[in-house]
Image 1 (cartoon, rainbow, N blue to C red):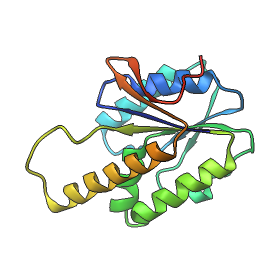
Image 2: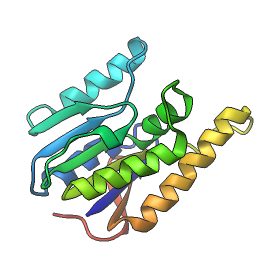
Image 3: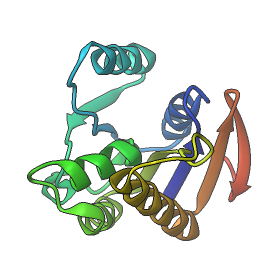
Length: 171
């Protein structure tokens, strides 16, 4: 089963994705993609760690190359998040671009019982972006559309509340 949880910054999408995962069977695996580069990113990682404390998640840190992730067949995976993963794959020296993201997601979906992908809404901000940023935004939009089409459940997080777009919530 594939779930896509979509929302803007501070929308509550991570907490919603955790709630979905906790309602499903299997070993809970939190697949963290953020590369800690500064105090701000460290604070975000710490916030997410505290948020899922006591929820039974096994954390795996993987910034790129998801096809190398070893999982158990019944795993219930929460990928946090697609936007970070894409940025890592597009702009890191060892990254494989959008194609690597797609192949990595296929690997996770084949290797697990349930995959929940958290992704960001980044398309309602400014109007003037550089070429690399526009390329990134277009790739993220394409990935979001593709995974939404494939997903059994698509939920938009709005003010911490689920706006159901496709499928049924597991509670």
